[in-house]
Amino acid sequence: MINLILFGPPGSGKGTQAASLVDKYNLLHISTGDLFRFNIKNETALGKEAKSYIDKGELVPDSVTINMLKAKVDENPDVKGYIFDGFPRTIPQAEALDALMAEKGGISSLLMLDVPEEELVGRLLERGKTSGRADDLDENIIRNRQEVYRNETMPIFDYYFTKGKSVKVWGVGSIPMIFNRLSLELDSL
Ligand code: C5P
Ligand code: MG
Image 1 (cartoon, rainbow, N blue to C red):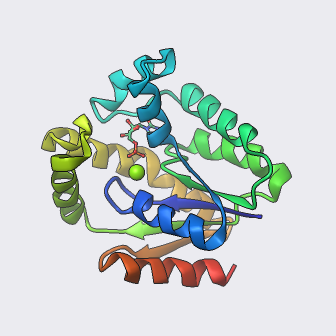
Image 2: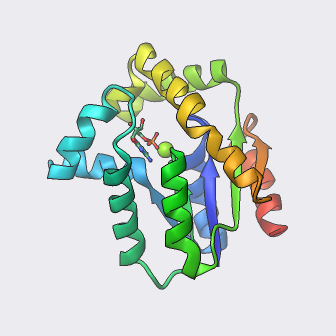
Image 3: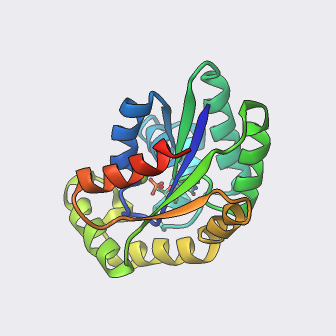
């Protein structure tokens, strides 16, 4: 199996690249952000709980996010591998993911899309014009999401780096160019 963490700050292109990678490598794309938005749209209890955090650019509590992710993995046991997009966001989430993947060969690699912060803010403001996402519309919320990433999520890069699994990929350039950089890393696994 290939179990890939597609890592990087908000706006770095994880969702865009995951959409192409799943086709090429035949993997299941799991985006926890998309799962939350689906629940919000359908006004489930989970969606109502998550919305209060997401609208402020804060993280949903680990137990909620981990349970949702586990359920999605358990629903799809017979796949060639997974691409995790937007998860893990905290060290406890990374530990939970390692435990969950232990019997599936573990995490193969963490590929980080490396993009400067000012570029990210510009991209997200641009995306906000069409994404319909409240958290993409307000520059303060966008900046808060970047700060949460720096403080709570970035340590996950080092967590997997010490396991020899983290790689940075330059995330600026055309979408096909960045896709080629990611593919080169995946092909070398
Ligand atoms: O991954 P994405 O940027 O789509 O996530 C949108 C929002 O969902 C995040 O800003 C955060 O509020 C919430 N989220 C979370 N924990 C995750 C993934 C997403 O709290 N693991
Ligand atoms: Mg995304």
